[in-house]
Image 1 (cartoon, rainbow, N blue to C red):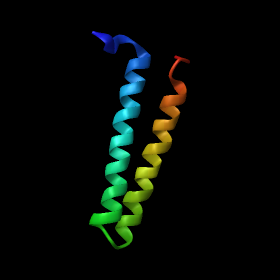
Image 2 (image 1 turned 90 degrees about the horizontal axis):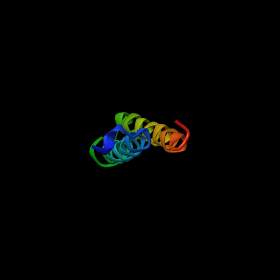
Image 3 (image 1 turned 90 degrees about the vertical axis):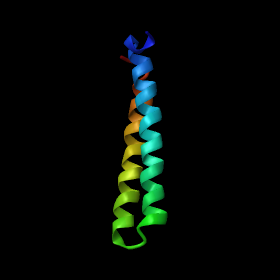
Length: 61
């Protein structure tokens, strides 16, 4: 199975974190219109930042 490769694991982690980040930003924009929406959106942006780091680590580990 190809999941033993560290780059494959990082690629899947990056993909999953982008999906979760989009979901959180979507929740913040459409579901919660009050102050909680800002929190959801900021956490979603944080997921994007961590996914960016995972993507940068591909090929280095």
